[in-house]
Amino acid sequence: MSKLLLGTALAILLGACNKPADTPASEASTQEASATPASDTNAPPAQAPEPETSVASAEVGDKAVDDAIDTLLGDHARYQEVINAYQKAVAQRDKDAVAALIDYPFFASIDGKRTSIKNAAGFVENYDKIVTPAIASVIEAQKYSELMVNGKGVMFGSGETWINGICKKGSADCSEFEVKVVAIQPGGSG
Image 1 (cartoon, one colour):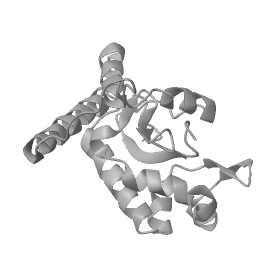
Image 2: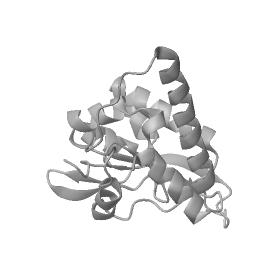
Image 3: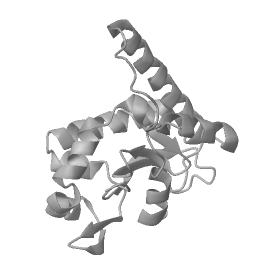
C-alpha cells in the first residue's frame, strides 16, 4: 500500500477533529510508521505515462495529500506553506530560515547523543550535524504528492523529517496553532 493511500486510509478511519496531532513520540515509533513500503515490490514495472497523465496524477496526489492533512491535522494550505519554505531553505542551505521553522525545544541526535536544542542559535550552530547531506537530499527530493500523512504529522521520506501543528498557548481546543518542523533524524529504512 502506498504511503499516500495509507495516510488517506488513516484519515478516514480516525475521523480526526481538524486539530494538530501529537508529535512523533520517538525515533522508534517514527521508524514503525515509516516501515510501510512505498510500493508493492512484486508488482511489474509500470510503463511511463504520457505527460498529460503524469500531470493529472500529480494533481490527484496533491489533492489526496491536501485532503488527508485537512482531515487529520488542519488547514492543508498552512502545512503546504511550511513544507515549501522548508524545502527551499534546505536546498539553499539557509540555516537561519530552517531554524525559524523548528519547534523548540528541539531534540536531535548529535554525535550519537540525544541533545536538546533550546533555540534557533543552537540549531544553526549544530545545523550540519542535524541536517546531514543524506537528510538534506531526502528533504529536497520529497514530492508533495508522495508525502505520508498520519496522526503524527506529515512525514518526509522514511521519517527523516516530521512537520506538525503545535497548539498555541491558551488555545485549549488547539484551534490556534503553528505549523513547525518537529523532527529531523535518520530515516527508518537507513
